[in-house]
Length: 220
Image (cartoon, rainbow, N blue to C red; front, top):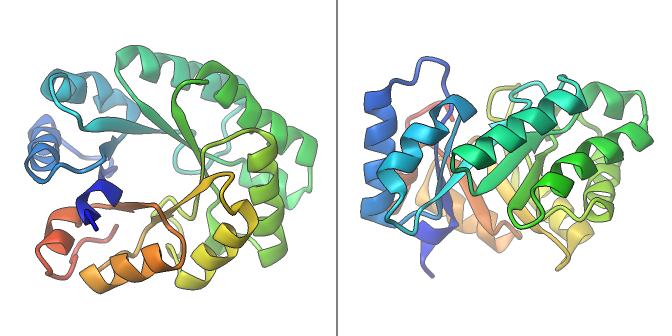
């Protein structure tokens, strides 16, 4: 197993500097990670470093609350793609989920996929704030919206990915979409167990440590 290709090497903290983004990108090149995962304002800079490599650029949309309007998410996505993003991780509108406004939730997802038809689009469910029934419903809506991935967490709420949630999400999407575990992937063993339970992508800021068999000491 090439564990490195499961990893979105992540740096989403608010005070991330250009120096830190450069370091992240160079680590991603060295360890041949799938993508770097960064905020939209850093995409163009990351592209200048990664343009001649096979490392992709994931950016986050409506992050971390998911509470912006669909129109804002669409604009954010368009600009991110223009700046060089290759994959999109959008945060679901959690309040709309709680309101059971499924029409809005579906439209919110569809609008992003419509403008990124050739890019992998992942929806972040923020499972720690949802019931199991809501997780199941959101996974089914993601399939209806033709999204490529369902993702567990932003890493900025009350908790991150759990093995139980990965198994549940995989049981719903089956082979029609993929599952990304994010937040709380601390060790090489954690990573393997997430994959065993159905994850095909891991969002972590500790990718280098995990590959080396060391504990990820970061908060994401």
